[in-house]
Amino acid sequence: MTSEAVRTPGAPLPWTVRHRRLIVFAFLAGLAGALIYLLAPPLRYQYTTDVFLGETLVADNVQPIENGSTVLAIMKDSILPSPDSTLQEMGISELDRFVLVTGIENGRAVRLRSEGREEEVEQIKAMHRFIADRILAHLTRREMLVRTRAEGRLKGARQTLEVAGEAREFYSAGLAQTNADESKLAQTIQELTAEIAKEDTAGSSGAALVGGEGLSHVGDTAFALGKRGQLAMYQGLRLSDMPTRQIERERQVVDADRLTAEMEQRIRDLTLEIATLEPPRISRFAERSINPTGPRKLVRLLVGFLVGSMLCFGVWAFLRLARSILTGA
Image (cartoon, rainbow, N blue to C red; front, top):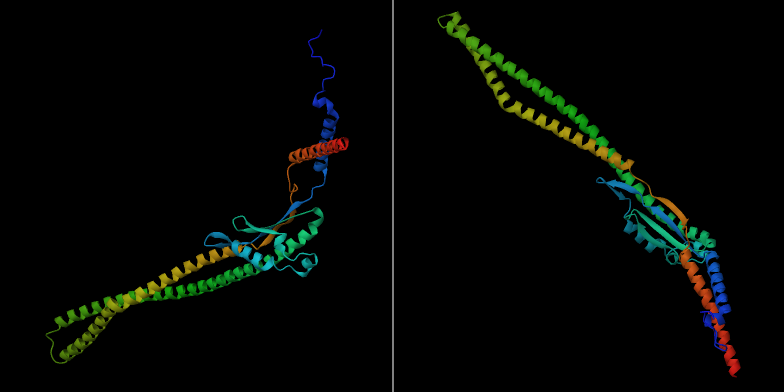
């Protein structure tokens, strides 16, 4: 006698044996449902359009041409509620029902996102094109305004630099002339001082002369007094007027140099601002997502298997219930 358990005649079979066909059918139905759910064509994809707002240099910082919040407000208040006739013929009366608008890249771009089937791609492209073209028109006007203002300031800075250069040349020439006049004045004062000293020495040695010689002395004295007057005038001019003129000329040259340096720096800044000004553009248009919207493949297999199995068991339970009802009747 073997050690295996022997089933008593008339005893009920195990549930798995009695319903093995049902279990096989349920497994096959679940597998078929999983494969159908997995291999069926995906229903919907995400389509994305990004609009770059453009950039400009402001105080050594790169900033969008238009504030991202302002752009979003314009889109939501003016563009989305007003589709054109082409979109209205497609049955689109409110774009915000089909297009989600968000800001990305720290407010440097806006994103349009829609979901739809592949056969709806032309409709999605039409909506995205309408919105992108309208916002680009606004951003392009803004970019032209920024560029025109920068070019105008650059032109003014160049003109001011030219005037400052001419002024510096003029003031530098005036300063050089003032320095030359001061040197000439100093030389004249030195010469007059020497002449007066010489005449004073000659006058003291001829004090004994009489007659006509005395008249000559009187004339020399009058002449000497005239030279002393000139000397006093030149000395006063050197002490008061010449220093003032020289200080004024030096200040004018310094001011012209400072203005020249400021305009040269301003020209460099404005040239860099214009060179770094990036116009707005569409960075990507109606790009379809790689994967369809929905669960991953493994999840789709499990869901399909469970749905198929439950459907099989449901049919079995319904048939059994119907049979019991008919038998009881």
